[in-house]
Image (cartoon, rainbow, N blue to C red; front, top):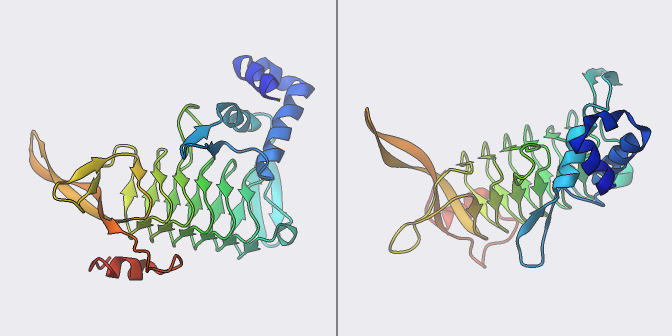
Length: 269
């Protein structure tokens, strides 16, 4: 499959051939079932992006035709089918939650009215709360809580770009935005309205001196929104950042509420 996908990527005329179409469809089917992933953890705790799988997702769009999809009183007009058979998959789906075919959703996941895009991976025990979005190819671990209105960014191109990764046990507070391949470590807690992009300063203030990080929230970190002063030609202005105020304590239940985790650090968000 990989060889066929790579050849078609270099020569789009091959998208007209039955062999290529079948290979792409097979890759999407295996993503949908969780057999293969756009990105996966490695033995050293890092993540590997499978670019050829992303290529298959990108090329799935041009081989699909627009069609009308009717679901009860709802009507959609799109190239992508919707996921089905939630009962057999062991997934709870609250209307009008929508997940596209080609997204893997493990048994035990709860989808409140929300959206999960193609290529995404959502592992067992995770809650995708109301009006949250899991973007294309995003990787969500086990027992994660994506609170109301969370935006997890998607990524298809450029191919070498890593997807957003939320690792096991993380708690993402209401209206947080995580995009551009940022990785949130295991059991980390993001307070409400934290915005993380590839260029966002993540400042650890738990020591005697601030330590700046970009693109990664360490395991068990408790993070709140903050700002720092930056000089511009027109003057000095406050620029958003994220602040690590401490670590999740061992005494804290892994299923604690966001407020409980923040209360330990005397922070109200």
